[in-house]
Image 1 (cartoon, rainbow, N blue to C red):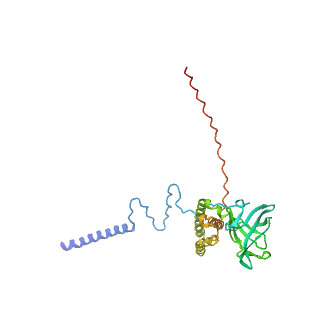
Image 2: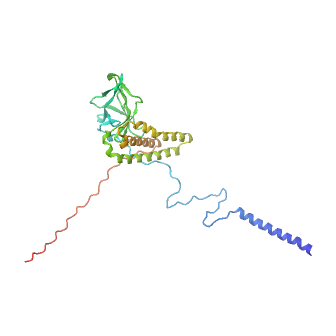
Image 3: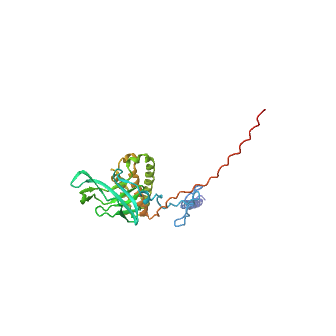
Length: 301
């Protein structure tokens, strides 16, 4: 009897083991799910997008940059501007066919670079030709063969982008260098230092966001070029503004050059030009009717 019962016991134990292994295999094939966890999806199964939080989609927004002020010719019209805030005089004026520039530039004699000299283009504004907005700002060319200056209009200033080298006025034997930022007299800017600093911070934020947006749209090779351009902007700005008078006390040149870079990036991104802000009319206030005068008490006899 013992010999007959033992195989049966073995068979029962083996069957139980196989049944347990089968259950274990099923349990291992389906991972354990904790309360509140998302249901398990088999490979290839469609998984629904996560629900929005607070009514807003969790999908990443396309990178862009904030709107910035694009100055027009009115910001410099009729104002006397000086190179680097202290040298020469330039005034943009309206003419019958557009705009003209009165210019008086200071320099040094071409035969003796320590002897100062100055040249004037006359009392009549010299015509300037519009070149559009290739870098996001209005660009003009001064029609003066002796020194054909090309400049971009900034907010209350202009930035000379050409010529790359100083000009030599042969008739006056005078060598002038028109490059740099022509802006207000530097002695008048210190009182505006706080406002200028706020404008620069806004422009720097726009430049950072703009470079991110450019990089997001570019391939790997272009991203490297954009990264080098962004890294070199600070030194380029320093190079332009290093000779601006009292720059350390007001930061005017740095703010305007940063705004110019932000405008250039917006143009490269193909973003629409911000609409000029219009002053909102103040609501009419109703005239207050004075309260009636209180009746005076009768005098006591």
